Length: 280
Image 1: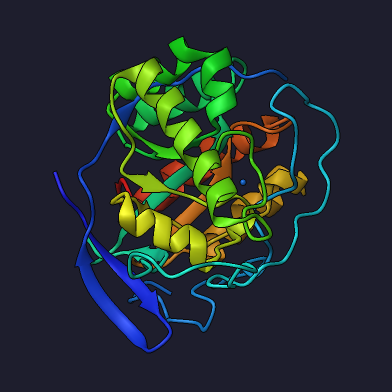
Image 2: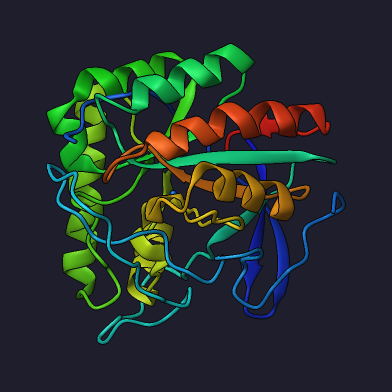
């Protein structure tokens, strides 16, 4: 199954074909207007959209969250060399009227991923899980649960490193190591990659192109990583979701009880408003 995705380039809008959906399963982790979405210079819209995904955390730490870094997509890392023509991050899905995508980052978590899976199963929808390779090695059976449920698994680096300041070889190693961990756990190689903090560098985009990885970003960030309260998460999503939106949520990296509670509210509301979910 393939998906047409809207790619935002510096010169305008391009339509392309996404890579094949890769199923994955939840793993273990110790304790982020109904017409076509507007195109912004950064590719993101809505409250908190310019904020990076979330703060760097150890895979085994569940302590307090810290504010994310701000990083513009396409920022070139020092020393990024030419290679494969760089891909462009995907900020919107192009699946037709009122089609949207839900993405869940930083897992797998033995606490929150199973809860998210139960909600998705209840409403018969699929999502994309951006998994940290190190977490996958801790909780491979949860990663397999995600895959077996028909969801997509996206590479989210080995340990949630900020790739922008890294050399091309260092960034490639972060991504490749996570790919290996995901393949070992679920038997599939991910076809999409999401940069932590939304921090894209030319070197990363060139690597994605060379490895046939679609770089996945987001267009709605309710900042659930900051635990602003369930009501705030729900209000943000409902106010900013439009046709084509890619919604960012989290099942790992800290206490995600607010995210779980918000999903129980926001998913049926979006369905009631006529939205349809696809994988990114």
